[in-house]
Image 1 (cartoon, helix red, strand yellow):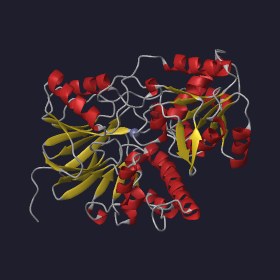
Image 2 (spheres, helix red, strand yellow; image 1 turned 180 degrees about the vertical axis):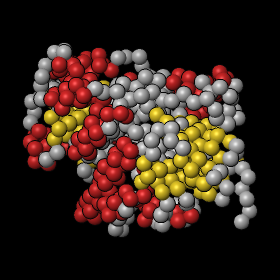
Image 3 (cartoon, helix red, strand yellow; image 1 turned 45 degrees about the horizontal axis):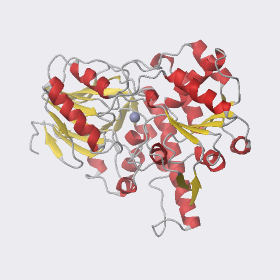
Image 4 (spheres, protein in one colour; image 1 turned 60 degrees about the horizontal axis):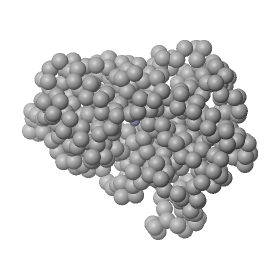
Length: 457
Ligand SMILES: [Zn+2]
């Protein structure tokens, strides 16, 4: 076999788009996949999840998982099902959260396939899930847990460390050494001062950076999230309405619960019923409580969250809360309204102008959340169209992603100027704008990556 002296990168996803993160690193005759995420959002993207992997998964030596979001871990069951049998390296909270997220994803896919076959509204002849719960469970024994800053050797020439990324619980950037070269994968990188997490680690040396660019063309508003939540809650209560918050199960749910719990304790808002109606977010919140070293919340904070927010798991209890028209605050999945219990709340309550839908985070192209953000007045789900009369609010200030300034600051602190920055995980305008900024302000060679292309280092 010919010795590979220069590393190669190939982007199998999250190039020219935000989802489907999968980057293959080839070096020293090893193949390492950084993340194995699912495409989400636009149908043409989702269909890509059905494509064969570009190489046989049995040829991949190891996976390095930056964090547990579905767009980073969601295709692991398919990878294993198609022959991958190596190690999946991750942090301890990432392993626990990924288990929850993958089982939920498998369940949703099983249900959607079953539903589509029953209703006959699928365009396929027979709808099949991408993978089922058994497939998801085959992933878990492959997880290998690592501490932050621990050196992990793939072989003598390839080693890496995880460092805090400030994005979600357990999320890590990857500092990888390939022979003489250091390449840093930012993974998804949080704001400079995340509310509940340690900030993204500032690194000194990188020859190459693979940088996410979700908010490469924007800065988050400066609004204080607690004040913003207070305003939206009081405004909804003025109308005796229901506040529905489609929420990401990991991080966003815990942040919002923490903020609202604080507002209640400080008596800035009345103590109306406050629910987290999402079995997945409930499990994720429990993982949060189990890993106190990985976040900034004190035991008292955790106790306050448990005291103030009622977590619902039971389906019948959920149905009763959905039917009830009295004022309340409900957090329910999913965060971009692509599925989950939030749909039942919307079905019942989005036609009432007294109610509010609060979008709290990034809404990918093609999702119902994005449609609402764009001002569309009806949504399609369960095979029907539903009219929107409720008020829609959007809090960008609660992003788990750094904005343009955060990204430029993080790249700017490397002591040695990187030879090149590869931009991924952004819609084309966002990546393009960030590339120009990196060139103009930091004099860096920045390249917007293309799906499927191979880049030599
Ligand atoms: Zn993420």
